[in-house]
Amino acid sequence: MEGKAIDYVINEQIREKEVRVIGVEGNQIGVIDIKQALELADQAGMDLVCVSPNAKPPVCKIIDYGKFRYEISRKEKEAKKRQKIVEIKEVRLSPNIDDNDLNTKINQARKFLEKGNRVKVTLRFRGRELAYVNQSKPILDGFAEKLAEVSVVEKPAKFEGRSMTMFLAAKSSK
Image (spheres, one colour):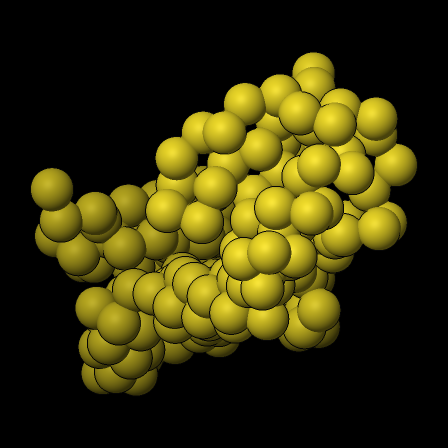
């Protein structure tokens, strides 16, 4: 999503008759005619940038537009860097899973949860296994129970098509 920065109206592009002007040092000059404001910006060797076009009258600052755009892009990059992207990891089980295999899958899910990801636990049914859907729900319940210290059940087990799914989320450390 590059190019998300707002395009500001600058210098002669400003179509208002009067604007509220903020000077180079951040001091408020007041509400003045647009021609006067453009002259002030030109004398300072800067640009007149409309920072709040919806205000009455619009607010304009006398600043270096190139530097202003650079600062905004730097802030956006910094904010993007701090963002935590949560992925959904999937763990697949079968109704006749052995205890050791189940423990391996639980450890795998624990690692995902400790990294802060969400986990989708899928119990897939094949052929005749569909006749034993009711006996298979305790497998998912036990799975969630063994991960209770590191996770919370976000969506309980639900039967959809040929599989039963449940979502787990990492407990927030507060």
